[in-house]
Length: 325
Image (cartoon, rainbow, N blue to C red):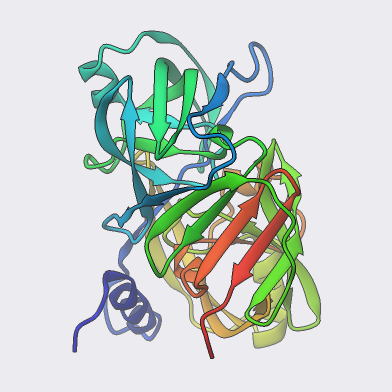
């Protein structure tokens, strides 16, 4: 029987929870958010659409952690595989790529990561191109990425008021103008809330309780915070055996989590039971302003349960396309 890496990880996690195998190491994306004090957010440039009004379909691939990557050219060089991260609000370029292209570098500034606040330098890019769309005079973080195969991370700063669609059946990315969508069978549209300019938070339900769901295509695993953990314990009891999971951020920052299972989750018309999540009260929940309310960070393990997920940054909407019944 052939298994994808994602399915193999899920099976390994289930076995780990039963105490049968050692816990795996999961890779979790870093929240890349510039410090909002001092110099503030850098000038990220103005998008320049090479083909205005036309949708741009970009064929992508999956990295070792089942995250979507797309080819990106920098100053005419490349393409380099950039991981698409809806949980980051400033793009980054691998430091080795910035050095190879001799990109001008600005002094380091504080950046919020998944774990803490770190100082990181900025690289200046003349032209960044994805499909038929480009951005000029752009600043991006120059990072020592944990995965040496990645050329960088494509965050939501590049999108502004556009619509981003992640098609998981075709492993592709579509960039388009913001537009009105209608719900229909197999398609559910939810209003979203912004944090730090990001369109990431929608309402989900755990049983009869409404919780906040943050959409993060840069994380392989789904995470939950302490209030959601307490909610799970009230439903299932606190005596259930827990399994620790070792995780690492895109910057190589290690942190530990505790494997839990949501008894029931309703999201965008999709009903899931016994959903594996990792409890890790990371810095990200504080930055997004949901540290004190039940919240789950939806990683690729859950997002890939949908046929496609579309985030409209102009209309503050998220669309979930379900697989045919």
